[in-house]
Structures are given as structure tokens and as C-alpha cells.
Length: 92
Image (cartoon, rainbow, N blue to C red):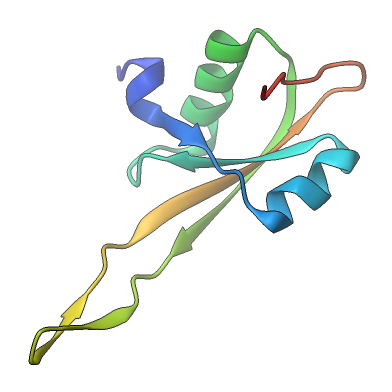
């Protein structure tokens, strides 16, 4: 089994992430091979909160120009975690 910090790589602080925090949802950058159950256990272990649901998305890498040839950024996985009523993650 993976370590909790290997599953959850970080909290995404984006404009969209700031908007959905008012609905008690948080965005996380997670390991691409992690499933929803592993993500839920890792969030509960790291932040000491109760998770209601987890939704995941695989973000496809973009084509970028590197010097005179094309390159591609890596694919990564994002999780939208909904916390139960009364739970909150302090991001300061």
C-alpha cells in the first residue's frame, strides 16, 4: 500500500479551486495510479477530516514547443474532494 503523501502530491490553489471551496470542495493533485478509495484514505489521514466523496479527472498533457521541435507536458490526475458538513481544511 502507498504512503498517504505518495498518493496526494498537493493542494491545487487555482482560481476554480478558490471558487468551489465555498461549497466545501477542494482540488488536489494526486498520483496518476491512485484510485478513489486510496485518495479518500490519504486525505483523511493527512488533514484529519471526514471525506464525503471523491471525483477524479485525468488532465491530458499539452503540446509545447521546445526550442525547434515539439514536446509534450506530462499527463496528471486531479481529484475534487467533497468534505462532510462541519469539516474544513486550513490552507494558510
